[in-house]
Length: 199
Image (cartoon, rainbow, N blue to C red; front, side, top):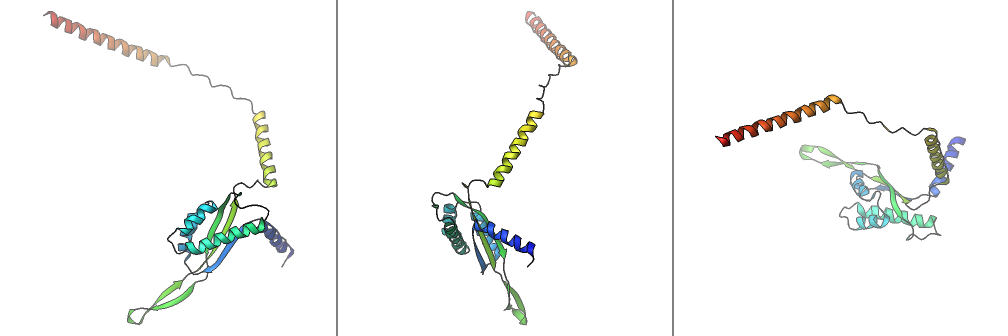
């Protein structure tokens, strides 16, 4: 192994030490069926995810529940000083990859054989903490971004309030002409009605 590969592998190991996760490999169910269960619990709090899996009617929920319990135990082993009840744990990542496929034949009519694919899958579940403080590097980056935005705001002069455009005179004249026409129409109809009454 080269020096660069060894260094990246060590960095990856150090990063994984702080992450609580669990894996299930080569479980004999199709990945499609397992993904339906994985979609149920992705992003949910641990307590709610356990309840969903416990009362789910899908067969794949049983191994998924075991993986979730294993991830919780791994988190407790890595954070012995903390109580899990005080933490706000949730399922931050859960993904299902396809595993090995067993190819078998099933007898079919007229001497033929139909191919059967017995699929398997690998499940990876990662826990996260909603109440966890931001990493120091990330906090520094966020502070720098805020400082840059404030500097840009100071440099830009305040925008002048938009001036109201004067109303067009022609529109005002048209409205006045229409009003006058309505009044004259009312007067003429009123005069006609009065004349009819006199007769």
